[in-house]
Length: 171
Image (cartoon, rainbow, N blue to C red; front, side, top):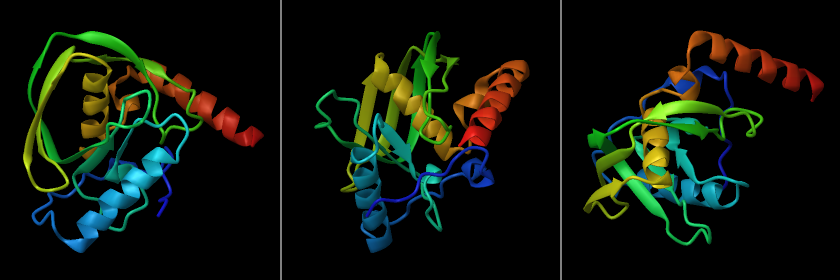
């Protein structure tokens, strides 16, 4: 089932995802299925965190597919960045920041190593230094109640806030 994506400045976006203790729980499995359905049916979407979505109890789950053909789904449960190297600035946007074409250059680690469980409860480790690395950091930030806007200097964020308010008035 498609789930509504929360839009900034919804206060629920600041909520952290709760630790998943039983991955086989029917609520958890339904959440994962709904997240993938929403991911694949949302234009230009390559990742979602449960904290971005209108779930009653968001958990520490993110789904990602950065492949051009959208055929490499990844589910990360209780993901943590266990190692990172280097720094880069990367323009990113967000499905929760309306309209989605509003983006900004954000400082991110160039390379990350992430540990998580997959949807079957198996431990996975992902090492990446490409677009996937930036996407992983972005989605894990969501699970910790942070948006990419939180990483910007105050003056940049205020400028974006004004732009969003102006665009919302037009709709």
